[in-house]
Length: 242
Image (cartoon, rainbow, N blue to C red; front, side, top):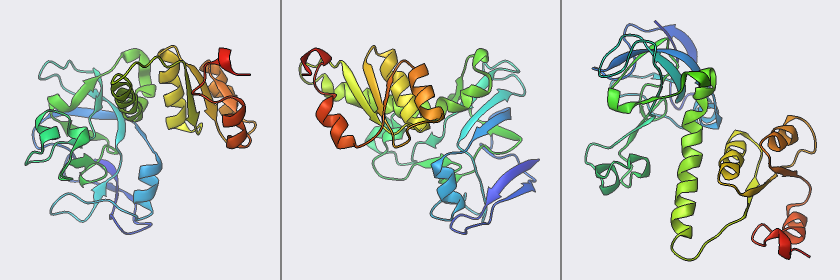
């Protein structure tokens, strides 16, 4: 079975190789990978900036953004069900956050992460994943479901923003998103879903970014950020802007 592996901490060590084992959990549902995303984290790991191989191994299977299909039905999952594996696993101690089921907010740093920290990733033809760490996704999403993982990061940020806002009277109307990369676009999308007026600021003045932002129903802005904040501050309702 083929997989993309590297030696963490060693630049230009990535290679496509045949493994004599199936990455993932010792016991779990077999899934076949459909698509794997590549993000800035992967780029940094490939550059040797960080990353940790599983215990007892020198090489790490890369990849933490993934959509797959169940290869054999088990544990309530039918064969062919599209799924997204969860990246982070709780630490073995556990800390208070992991004990409460919020291991994405682990406090003691002993968590593990597929394709990043001490667990093989998803850039392999086949995986084994425990059912509790598989998320069913709509078949209509197809390969686009590979964006579920980065979208979950943005959704978590929105969740915390709203938690903080609810500590007092809070009725937001507008939001400013800085950067029109994938995370910025996903942030804008979730802002529009909340009924907010969204402005996305980026350095580029033309190309695909402005088009994508406007397709989301948001406003695109470029140029000096200071001028944007002066002319149209996001914390002021449009009806009050002079």
